[in-house]
Image (cartoon, rainbow, N blue to C red):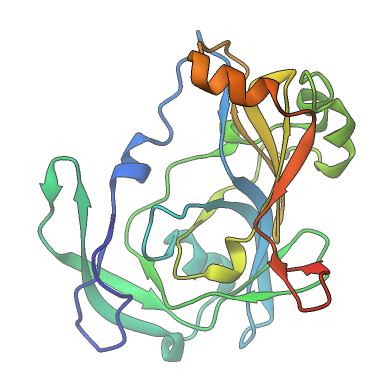
Length: 238
């Protein structure tokens, strides 16, 4: 994972995460899809008034947020919001050499419902983000998931034209809140509600569970676990 903060000075060298991105986009057609905390979103730049719908991977294993180079073209980002820098990544193979990148400022992201916006931190733009389209389910997919079919109405129809635009790291805490819904009928998946929309995490592939986990699961019934923010009045909010 990354070891330094996002750059605030010209020509600084943040260390991001490469282990996650290098593993994404590898598709084995013989296996069922393994869904991730990925949502369709709308990314915007307030200075140009332009926006683009695409996918955002919410990844708390990345210290910084990454944006696809295609953002520059889609949003016509002004030069005042672009900062030249360098960036290296750390993977299981060790750190890479610093390479030129650009830091994009002033971006905002919102769920497709458009009911609120999140201001993104300064975001690294260097390499294309691997395609995550196979990591989101359609409403029909969810409707056929054991234990979770009643959540299908929360998922939009998939659009094959959605590009993968963002990998949101833990420097954007506002996007990391989640409410997890689980079921004893399906121990290999969970449904997650995030500030940017709904997602499924896991695969429908059967998995073995050890006796300790099995006992823990059997003591639970269908329910949910929340990491939403809680106010003094006890109400949950994003």
